[in-house]
Image (cartoon, rainbow, N blue to C red; front, side, top):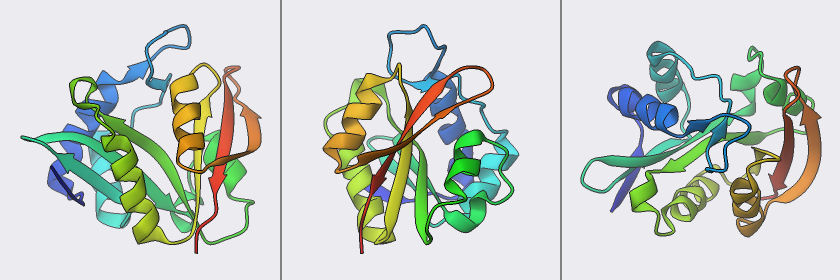
Length: 165
């Protein structure tokens, strides 16, 4: 197993994993609930600009974590990013963390720990209320519930905060 900084060459696999793990609000499978999937070009741009995107390699890329420094969120239109824009800075927003279903052996925790070590500042993450696995994960990583947001489509997200540094 190897964790390394993502590059623009990894964007295609990161997007594939995102598509594979995006679910609708009625799904009982953990995943990104009705996630607005960025284009391949957007993932390439993000990989180039954020130092907080890492991939997990186990015979190819089997997972990733995508975190963004607060200054990258200023132009984002997503309601979670807009809510976080008013929080005390600096911080990193972990928008996505995923490990291929057949490779889950604590690797998501390893990815999160690596980001926390590297970021050494407050980390925020969000989970749809339907996604109890993600909420439990955030709590296990030391995240404390700090806010809740209802999107225009009626999805409810809980925001978790982990203090570092």
